[in-house]
Length: 275
Ligand code: 13P
Image 1 (cartoon, helix red, strand yellow):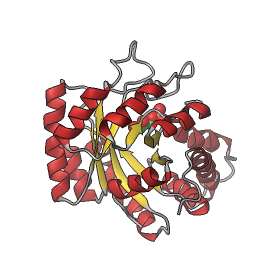
Image 2 (image 1 turned 90 degrees about the horizontal axis):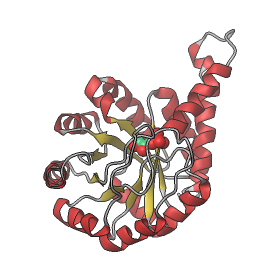
Image 3 (image 1 turned 60 degrees about the vertical axis):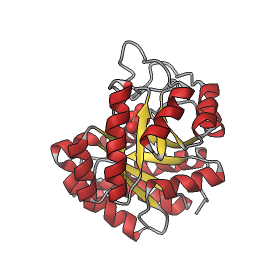
């Protein structure tokens, strides 16, 4: 069933685990994630990068995700990831997302607050809640990281914007790490204490398992996986025999690759068996 952000994160909060949020790109990645969620009885978030809403791909992908969510026997949240601005958010509403993220983390603090608050109001009018970001989570290719999220700023941001979930900068980045990241677990616990809100960890690919577990103990309730899901799909594509040309048959193994990847994360995050 299709559910909203607050509802799915409340499950994680109550059970002290984290919901895996997988970035999906096409029908096959949706199918792999869905098979894993059904088999593992796990609530799941399927999210789509903002650029697919900018460039048009989300229009075709959204019906696939909605079909999966409506026919699922586990809770599925359909989320726009790193919503770049009002246009993308409006498209997310139109294409049937059940949840939105606005990422104004690269803006000045007051501008981030202003835009995020505006999106929270628009989303509320559409019956939805919002993930905001404070402390810009960049790419592994950036030469330096921004200042980590400050707990008292997070409290102020949450109070002023009304977000339902907060993405924080605590040592992760998007992409394949050149060396394993070192998360500031203490800071996660402090932000959790200051905000009492479900916290979101971006850049989930490649974080050592023990740090994932510690981050959940400290208050992380949603963990994003993008890059490693892509590789789970693409690595398998390159292994399939070129003698298979019927695309549905060719895609069986890549779908299984995504499913197997999603299963390991559902188990690691403690989401498996929660439905
Ligand atoms: P990775 O691609 O590093 O897993 O990050 C995904 C993410 O955080 C999407 O918002």
